[in-house]
Length: 193
Image (cartoon, rainbow, N blue to C red; front, side):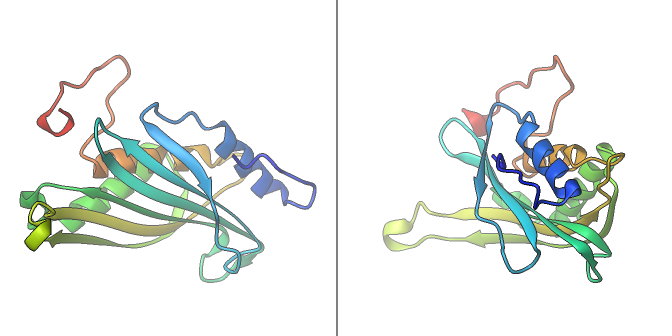
């Protein structure tokens, strides 16, 4: 992942690519590099993540790192992180009017927990329910989706790794699998059985 770093890549972006490549992800989180937007910034990289369960993915997401060495006035900096995460939720959750506020707090709390230097936070949370009919009567789905972006303060003293850890935590929270302290195991729930 992000292995081809050349002298044409700015130092800050090269450092971020190295951190992305060296990130230690959870064992149940599959990460793949995917195509990144080419017109938004001169340098970009994107990953897709899937938090796996016994049968189906518990949560999926994408994370994009954009870099413009000249800066971008709309970002208020030279880097921008953009994410999209989604997971199925119980019907009781999707109809709760507080779900968008809670989902947004998962995002901001994850950034704060990992001491991320982040400005210009923006985003939306969508809670939706779809009901199947006819041949798809068993296809009812309730989902929460969070789209957000922020300007990370990346430099040698403020690395990308805390932002990657915060994104990993966000995927866990959206999936209903909050991270546990080291050496603590979760009891199996009906959702994973």
